[in-house]
Image (tube, rainbow, N blue to C red; front, side, top):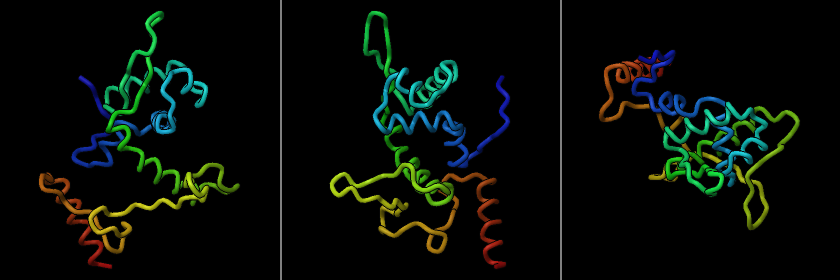
Length: 166
């Protein structure tokens, strides 16, 4: 039996963090989004110990973010390729990059996304795909979904009550 220090319940943020919530896993996914696929390339880019890298890659494969594929037979070697779910994580990393540049780059911008055609720096935002409006605290709020359990419904009610109080 496994004991967990954290139970995310039905929280989608908690469920995601449970799978990629450590720095090494996030940095591996960042590098994979930028085209790295091989163990030695991740190791060189990150400066991570091989045993830690092995464990994080295995976890990302198990969670469905990466697929392990052989690229050499003698000796057998594998590469780690983003799955559709792994590619779907790109906007999360983009939002983290923008947030980090806005709030933690005291020395200035060291890395950024740029438009390939113009070279201009991008200013990433999160947008509602239905309305096209930027998602912010003014127009959007957290709500219980169709299968929300009692804990989620209670948390949503508490959020609404706090908002109503001002």
